[in-house]
Length: 271
Ligand code: LER
Ligand code: MN
Image (tube, rainbow, N blue to C red; front, side, top):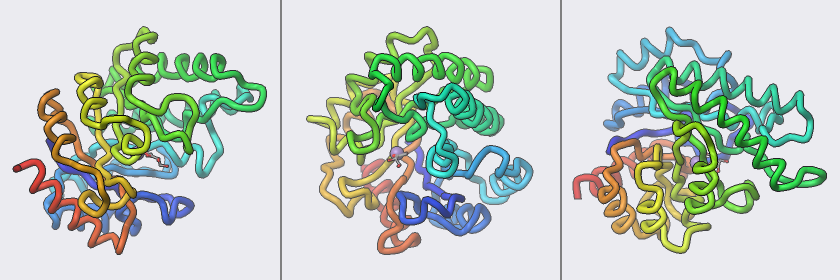
């Protein structure tokens, strides 16, 4: 398993669960100094990312891109894959596709989290799920062309009413033709929704594509009450060899959250 840490380039998400906030050069330098393997980037859009600058930073700091998030499509642009308006759904899919392509060129997957939206108002659950499936049937193969999976992140009940746990998400993925959508298990959401996080990870098995490494309270691992021993045992048991990517609050500050994450990563992965 490899370590990663988040950099948000979206001022509108200030106070959200990202560690570094002061631009790519700053985030890369600080991640490298603490010994992380990779960074996960949360950009305003694909167009706001400069491939050359990122290539240079990856080389200079010997860091990989773990994944790129699409959440700004919702937070900043109010785009959701399950919006009742067909134009909004189409723009949402294009927004994500551009990030899939950009991330793919770095050998990294894109993440669908909050842009999945929710079913509500005149949109039935069946309809919302059908729209989500339709989008994933495009995005999965698109990511496959770059040799990476597309990551579907189930969220806790306060953030979506589509899928909140591994069991429901897996059942949904099994209805898709594409086999290239993998699950992102965010340990914060899982702490809220799963009866047993370790059992849920075992159930996900080879379908687990990425992990958001966060404690019960969205702080760095070690600063909440999630029992990480069984979680790590489950990840080892399923042969998970992806990233543990810190999507956590910058508390008490970015540097301390990053250091705490690295200390936890080292003791849990080596232990
Ligand atoms: C996205 O990765 C996520 O976990 C959301 O809870 C952030 O709003
Ligand atoms: Mn997450």
